[in-house]
Image 1 (tube, chains in turn brown, purple):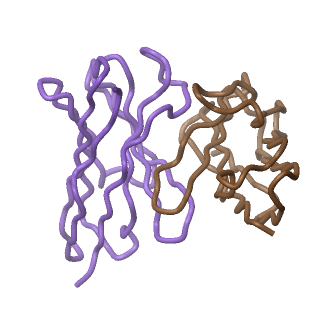
Image 2 (cartoon, each protein chain N blue to C red; image 1 turned 180 degrees about the horizontal axis):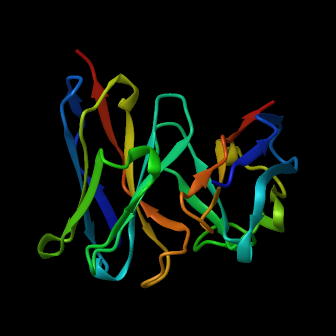
Length: 108
Length: 122
């Protein structure tokens, strides 16, 4: 199975700053079948990015995804107060589908 | 609007079975795969399996093989996940989610149910 490792585990930033979250796969993810989700306490995850770089419907353009193969990045260009949450990457290239362990983006 | 609405919280004793439902509305139920995930308290997301509502085909993570069954009832646009022989480590929020693209298995999870808390306690 493909193991996804996210870094850092916790990221402390202030509103207005730029956030860069990393996701590394244990083997290549074909055709960039990599997604990013945001999860707030007590809520279900929300799809942000699919296909490594495509924004899901309704997602603000301050969110962007990049990468291919084994290294992927989620960038939030200017943090808004509502962006502080846990972020997960997920591969849907192979079965079992797997998720990273998450990055907790917290207010500094 | 499109949505998935799950059944309410459950409390089960060790060794029992639990069945969670996921009712779809606002879209063609048979057109999109449904996946099931779970999240233990304070932990990350774990994928359990998928079902194709059009054919009834299903596939499961090896970890859950023999204990989980995912089915659908197309007459009421509802998917079900049944987990047998539960133990304390099955205590988690269970989620259903729908893929993004019509008839696509290899796809991100576009829409999620609200989650169902399953607590296993003696």
